[in-house]
Image 1 (tube, rainbow over the protein chains, first blue to last red):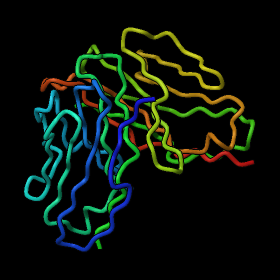
Image 2: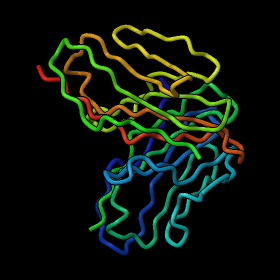
Image 3: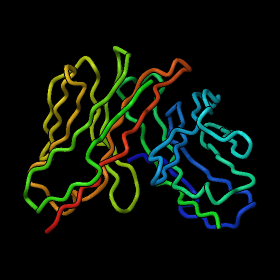
Image 4: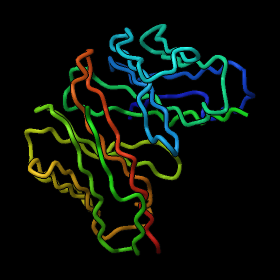
Length: 115
Length: 117
């Protein structure tokens, strides 16, 4: 089965450091989503892309977060500088924009801890 | 704005019992899609089922069944003869057209199901 691949699976770093999370969407999918999961807020949509173009990043703290898709096989989410409150599990998902009955397929997530 | 409410935060059942997970949604869109995802202790999110707003037919898949009722804006999920492997957090999600070029998922807070042997 095709899968969304996220790296790294775990990341522990100190406050102030830059963090880069990577996602390889399922081949052929034209939308990519970034979500953050915390105990308090649950699953929140941070940003999403269609055909590599950013459509909405209103869920993302703009001053420190950035999301890009350098090519169709790679999406990145960067945090600079990182803060302890960024500790969460970050999920990437991919799907079809116009596949109205298609689910988003999720990666296994990156568990991020900022000390 | 869209909203998904899963009123049950945690449920515990004894193995082989049936259990129903509730999901109530809010949207003004007439076209929308409903999903259930499972998140086992290992952390990944696993797609279980999708339903569109024009199809109120209930569905059964093995021990899983889903009851979609537009009149009450509910999309409930029942596990029959629960097993320990069913222990997980279950998320209900609502998908509507974002207007920005894609369907956007709104998740409920999840229901943690513990099946006790």
